[in-house]
Length: 621
Image 1 (cartoon, rainbow, N blue to C red):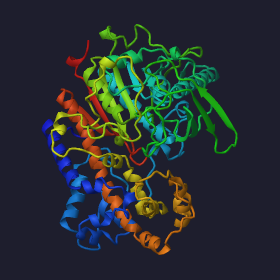
Image 2 (cartoon, rainbow, N blue to C red):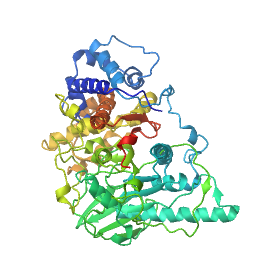
Image 3 (cartoon, rainbow, N blue to C red):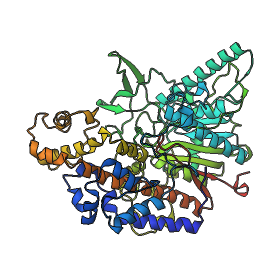
Image 4 (cartoon, rainbow, N blue to C red):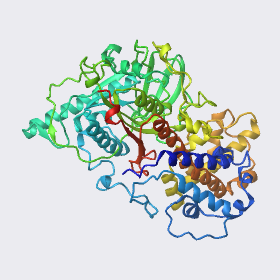
């Protein structure tokens, strides 16, 4: 699964090459596709590139530009050497997204992972008790990551795991009940913590029934071990590891009981008298508000207060209200968090083991003699994991690993790179301020999410813009599929770019205004699309539009696709630099690390996991 590790000098040389490439083509990676017409992006490309790319069909774009494994490339014209060099260099420098010995399929349609061939919604490799409430993507993720965490625990002789940004506890449950580990999940959203506890009890109830039915205490897919603990807490990117350990020792029930109700994907949120729609996938944790595409919610408030969730079921006009009172904990924060997500993956069958007794009570507290007492070094070691920890949260976990003597191993799967803080942009859009802390003197205000390493920080032009980092979150495999089958979805970028041009003509000061997603936009005429989109920026839906001008823009759809594909070609380059910077950060502190493409990229685009283990002489024993 792992690729041959790079030496320290190879890592440094690669970082230099990545920075050089990205600085040369910054005008592409920093461009917003919705400004294709308003900023005349096509004319920013070299004339030779325009001639070579201007008439390509979507399948040709896929084969000639984005597909690194294309066997036979047939060029309709001679390409400039600079364009060929960009493609070759971009493919050569990035971390592979498929495991060694695996190649991306040549077919038009992506091949489903083998575990979903018999049932597209249920992993055949994951016990049914761990599939409940879990989407296929997450089933794939929790299985794969869980097995890797178990291997790290075996290697480091640790039986304790901390899952940061644990959300509804899907990974936590699998590690605990499926792999027999002693697991603590820390999550900032009290509603998700409440649901995690409910799901734990549902699982225990199911196990009790199956044990009674089978007449045995041993069942497949279950391993003996304590029930998971769930802690409410915000993991600040600026707090020390000592503060982090103190958070892990907090009792769940100290912050009140958490009323719960049906969790729907779409929620209406009322905070401090302000109303906004929150597109929140409840499968994710709360230290960030990402969707599956890592987009951010623009409508959010920084004021934690009593919150009413009016959860609307699309199939039912009735509404149920849940009142969640802000818990009186300095490190707890209801609903408004920048950094975290909870997603799931695939792994090997877990061992058969003993089931916890039906009467087992999930103890939310960390026992004084358990793994998180700061003073008992011999019994305090643990492995740290974060599944799609958003923005600075992944960087924070790596810093804790490097600094905390009790963390012996880490698996880090990152996402939402645009929410990483930088010196140039210390508060990116979509990132809310954390709550006030008890320990202001223990905070470090000088560390950012990028760059983390001294080496990258010292490279000229190493800076990565918000847009470049946002582009690194796109799903390359999904777009390749759209290109190959010439999906109607490809027209949406052209529609949005044309609408941006119209908006700018009416409101020149309004740039890249959010109109949110227009459902099934590719099935609408542009007139209907504009009618729905214009009111979202304060313009009348019946605004007169020049059909000739619009028609001219829409005829350039293939050029829009080409430009977006060029930016997408650079997206893995940006991601590679971000992850390599983290590897260099660990290297500078004496820790070796490796990357592995753990998940199927077609199912889980952010599929690279960074793994590090401390040597025996570095352990706090």
